[in-house]
Image 1 (spheres, one colour):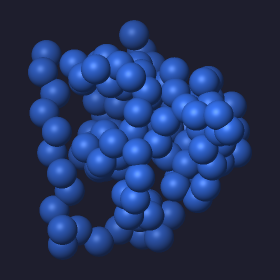
Image 2 (cartoon, helix red, strand yellow):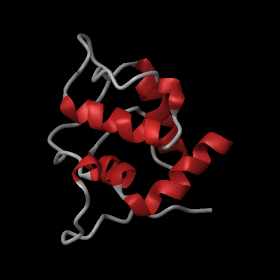
Image 3 (cartoon, helix red, strand yellow):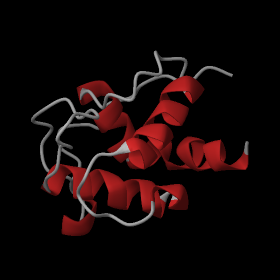
Image 4 (cartoon, one colour):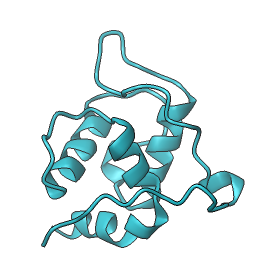
Amino acid sequence: MTYVYRPAPANVSSSPQNNPPAFTRIIEVRSPRMNGQDIIFLQNRLLSLGFSGIGSADGLYGPLTEGVVKRIQSFLGRESNGKVDRILWDYIFDSRNTTSLQSINQR
């Protein structure tokens, strides 16, 4: 099965808790660890999809969150480098992809 990236239409409105901050940077594991509100949004979205293995949404991008991102990338047929770029960010936050993302936990 092939999954195609579908960006959300620009005119779609959503409630504040489902409206992530605009993508501003590539998120990846670094030393010291990257942190910020965007990472909290990412972690909360992953938790809402059932990826409880990341622990809590602490705002630090570490190996647990990176591991889930790599699983998503692999599932999508992308390079599993653990980096969250704009395309992956948009895919994760697009509500139309919720079912396919949730299915990763069932594998």
